[in-house]
Length: 125
Image 1 (cartoon, rainbow, N blue to C red):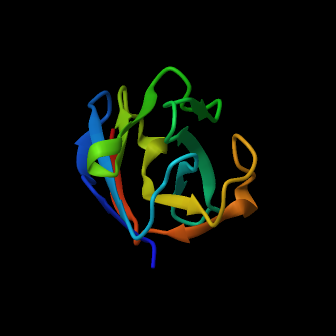
Image 2 (cartoon, rainbow, N blue to C red):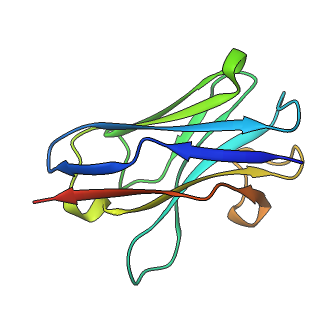
Image 3 (spheres, rainbow, N blue to C red):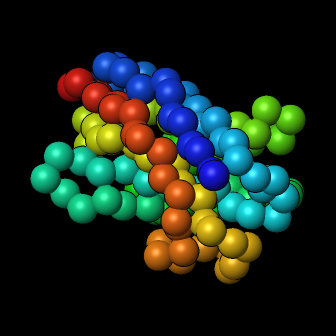
């Protein structure tokens, strides 16, 4: 049973940085990817970025490119989302997610099957 547990959310001011963690367990992730998504109040969930376990390749959505970065620690089975220059519009619940199987890179949004419980990030102006 795959389990994903996010942590690190909180209240910060615009321009601050925050690092989220996603601890994964339940399988060997090998050549799989791990994604980060977010859902702002009243909005649909959106893709933020993804990392591939095997080589650390990353992919980001345009709105966070250059501000957010994703890394992974294979030994700890943990993925990180480093968020810099935060803006009020980054306020959302952030989720990590994993596909059921090794598929395309980056995975299509509908390939993600396992989800964490989410962690709230609030950016004040």
